[in-house]
Image (tube, rainbow, N blue to C red):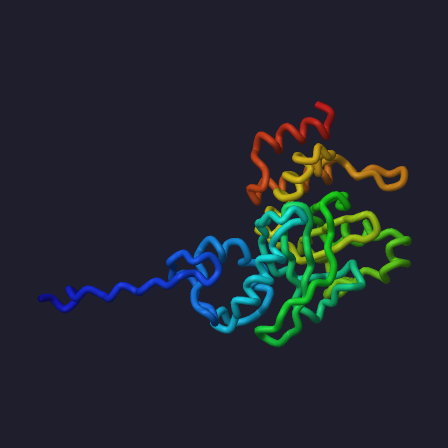
Length: 252
């Protein structure tokens, strides 16, 4: 018999503590959680900031309940971490900022600098309240902060020297009364864009890529095309969608 010919013992499966299905997917405090049940509350479990082996059945049930919509249906969501730069008084750059991206909104959570700390809900933004999602450089971001917004939320502050020419790009989420800014993260940008487009398509809302009107000024179509190109590079939209929208913006 060869050195590696011995068969390994098959790991015994146990009933899922939620649905009873035999599983060995995730070990938790009171037993095991199956793949299907884990999928229904993965994001909320992550928000607890705990070792899975210390998560109780009661906590799992609470997380599953939090994962449902107003009709009692489970809603898929994705938890991402963002490097926050400014735009809203409820968020603090000294904290870890997380976003739960759902089908109809983005829920922002914060956690302190200590590891394994539970995330706390701060506020949410409905897709119906979003005006645009774009990728912009520092100069473009500052230009979008109107006097009214500065009066409401204070001056926009980026963690950089003002005299230096910067080429960093930022994820900008513009709503009715404020503009949120984050350091660019291609995967997060693509996810938010796709969810927002899907929501607007399902609710027959205006296309996210149409120029946004502020007062009597319309944002330059060339800037819109630049944003579309960024989304194309991230594979958030297809080349056909990019070309069609570019022709529309240029009135070709």
